Image (cartoon, helix red, strand yellow):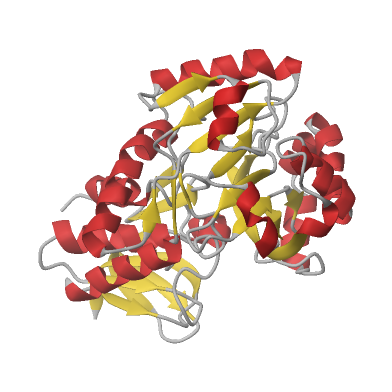
Length: 395
């Protein structure tokens, strides 16, 4: 059988794309391939669970447009499907004098992006989150929380209801164009399709290169390590509490995230992972490690951010240092109040010159589309991303 569309990757982006295709390409045969025994195993299953507002992103970027509209679509989808979610809101805090101009810039960016954002005083912020400490704050009402694995499973049900097929334990090992079609080599049988959509996440660059896509970036995996507040300390956090992003470092910094199950996660830091699916500090894969540490872009990024990178590594090794970062937001938190919890690995596309790819990166090739950078807020934006990709494919 030759499928009309084959999607590699059973995470939230692959599933949203498949769902859009089964809805908008009437009669088309759609196949999703997932190498794991279950769906949403990696980035989706280790997601923070935040429905993002879009305040951080460059106006008119894919991220800004897809996140703002995607958040609304996500809330509507959860309402339609009966998926538990909550628009709990987010506080972004300036805790140092030098951060005050940054929080003003962030507020202005939020306005440009059309987001419900309000500047509030420290006293007003403490009325929302009584245990915080800050000099100034932004309140983002539209931010929320959900379990994106449950969202993904809802996508999967709709795919199969619409006639699509999902194959688990099927790993894409190579791709080649053949007779106007795409042949996907797998750990089982070869699969042929008229068109391939690569949503391979942590392995998306390898699949893209196998399909001879022109790609000037490489996936470098960064592990984000989290702690969880002990149950008797969860009252310290009511919603989402974030710092002002450091403009000299490309990650958001540690923050507090209430989960939809009422647990509270604290983190993440951001350290190089020596395995693309390396959720533990000791995880190592020779190929993955060599590809990262021999890549010129990694060393250029490290040279640019070596100070902050060392601090991230120290926070990974020292619970005391991690706690001190959290205390900037909530001074009451003590080292004994937090326990380690599951980490995540971010599939970050990195250019040879050391620049992180800051937006979604979607690359065309012969009979194929490759999603080669889809970090946060991809889960929030998944419905919009899936519709966009489906719209890029000619009937």
